[in-house]
Image (cartoon, rainbow, N blue to C red):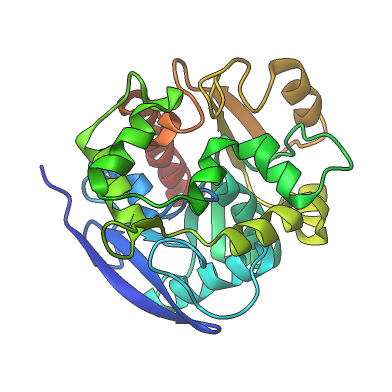
Length: 298
């Protein structure tokens, strides 16, 4: 069964956001808001969407990514308020929010600032603090956490195949190359050959990184998580290394202070393939089904 897909542009402060929509456009359809990671776009959710026929899935390109480049500041509060504008535009009162990587942090801040708009949270390999050394500059944090994923933002590519080749060499996708991944990567490029470039703004990403590590909105949200939250973790990290972002002992310690958060590992995934690989997408889709069903019975 093919899940219907379309896009729309939603007015936000300073411009518009491009929003991907999968599934029926009806108010009675089970609904989830999907929020991508720090250098990604809404197309990163394609495999998850294919596993949720009949669901209405709303997936924006966050500002500074994809086809969303409004003027103005970035940061977790700006992204959270943008998401509320998307819900308002589409007439959605309250929804399950699913966030991957930075999208999980945005989801926590949205749930804290706008608690009546979120019912439950699915945090996909993100949301809880990362093990980042203290005292690093913004650029050093970006390099420490993202490595070549961030470095590519300054690169130029002769054509789409050259961009595919860059990612084929990336260890995260050595065993998980799919047509859906190629679709995501092709969408990521803007400009003209032979000077194609990734759509993500480095400056916006840097401001978001500073806010994640030194801002008050996320820190405040973590002191009072307001909604039931399921954290799905990947056992491997951005470079397919072990451990992943959330080493078991450290995660256990954080969960002791967060009674609203439960955690479950998605076997044989890394930080990327937990949403953009077949196994990971199936696990995330199953979690979305469960959380939407729990919302309906609450």
